[in-house]
Image 1 (cartoon, one colour):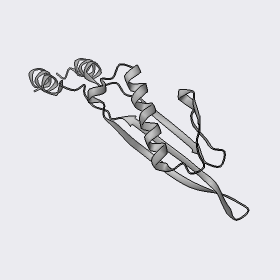
Image 2 (cartoon, rainbow, N blue to C red):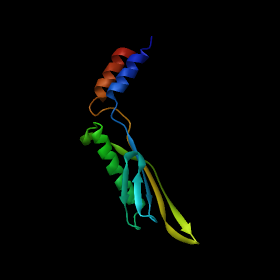
Image 3 (cartoon, rainbow, N blue to C red):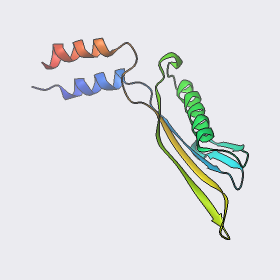
Image 4 (cartoon, rainbow, N blue to C red):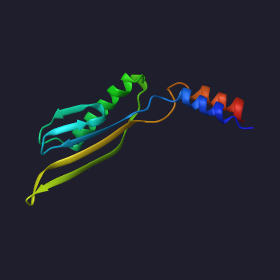
Length: 124
């Protein structure tokens, strides 16, 4: 008989801290925001998608650590990154940049062998 409740509890107990950040940048208005984080910052009109990616990952790193993630084993990934030109009167007025980053889902570092043993002992 499968022990789904036990498996669910093991997964919840060994899962790493997860969270995400979405950063929006408007180079015409020269502002970057991450609304869920209460973050606003003035940016130059030359701000790029690479700059936004760096900022989103920095915000995410700080958020994950504040939530208890181990900084030595933090795995971050960019889930989506888009850049659109904003056109006004047939000219590019600026760029709208969006970057979403998350902590890569998985187990807490070092617990893979323990999880495998528990699963083998109880579910095989």
